[in-house]
Length: 415
Image (cartoon, rainbow, N blue to C red; front, side, top):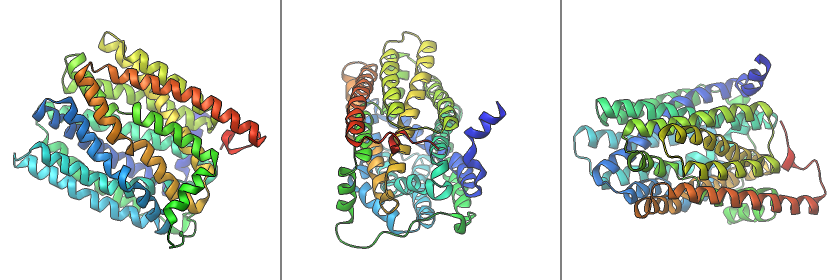
């Protein structure tokens, strides 16, 4: 048991990654606290599921529009320094949300503007963080580090909303935004205290015209990249809209408030953390894992759509969270192991675009379906997307394997 746990946390033996891990847990918990508080505030002000979906869409619209340029910056500039800049810039909209709520001036358009500005900075921050991991830990620990990054996200997804739910229910939304503002200090300290000499940074990308198109051509010419990105686009657009679906499910399907919402989020996060640790212990990624996770995601989403009581819904969402995190982390690891170092920022920007940038399409669609029909309908759509991705993964990777005749391909890499 001790050996298995040690393997699950293998990347934490790297000092730079250990600092990064601690800073991210605190900072992302604050970000999630801000996210769910903003969504709950919009729902309280408007009572509209579409408005909730629009809020999520505006947060990720910059990623869809400008994410490729963010990836190019990640390839051209030192990633640690770039992350220090983005963390400072992210404090601006966070301070704005704190100010308008503290002064009781909040209007829906103000929240829309703040989340859009946050997303604008994130279109640089996210691909930089994604491509920075391998520089901290190296390729041998990459699968483990990506799984631990999923743990960071899911711990934050639990801690942030849980704190937000307690604060909203007791003292209101203002302390949520104020506390989030303070959490940025943890990431700034972590980045500043790193040892730059221990980073395995590739040479910066050349400054020449057509660099973004060059990244797209690289993906088109590399099926090991194109197939996982296409699968992520499908499930990311139609299935990964839980920020919109869960608050609506809590309020309208189960007749609850912030506490019910927290139960759903925490249940899904718990399943995700367990799965991420197991995946990190195994240290494997590849076509088989991606296809199996897609299938499990589809089945769990369809089951979640029909659960009649909150307790059963919580259990099913834990299974859904487990399948989701294995699907995403396996695709992430597969892409990073297949991409050339000088293209990593641009390709991981494409990953961020299809994962997060698809939300401006899927978010409003989820909100509209929930409002026009039933909050459970988006879960049905998520289930269909997962089953479709499983079928597509099985056939696409099988054709690729037949064509390459390379059983030791990156598609079955392990670390």
